[in-house]
Length: 138
Image (cartoon, rainbow, N blue to C red; front, side):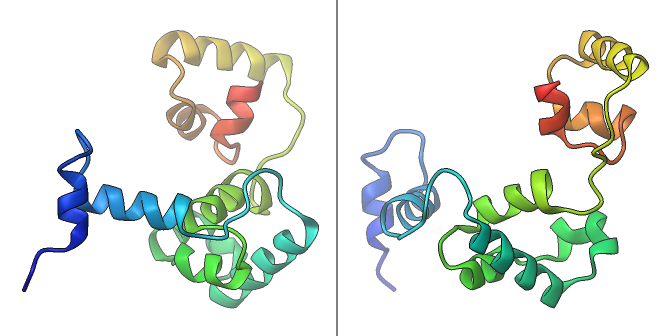
């Protein structure tokens, strides 16, 4: 079997493999993927795709069992990375959206002192149900 053109391309891109080049091309260059804010109809298609694949109460295992490429194919205007991020940070109904308390703010500051700006680690340890983006924005 002859090597793919991606091996040849990767030779000219320092620090990148053939897979890196192929993924970048299809995700960023050779697609009709929309960048920027999400339209309401995109969120609606994302919700329909999500409901067809898993139950919302299984959100913790979603990343392991979900095929984001299937969701992206259903949404049509977004790639798998965008769909996964949108679900994780915005659409997941299990996200804790309660108002931050002064105690939570103090705990967040202490956690940043201890762990740095590792937002995902901080929310897993101290704020279950909140997103890393929520902690970062706070």
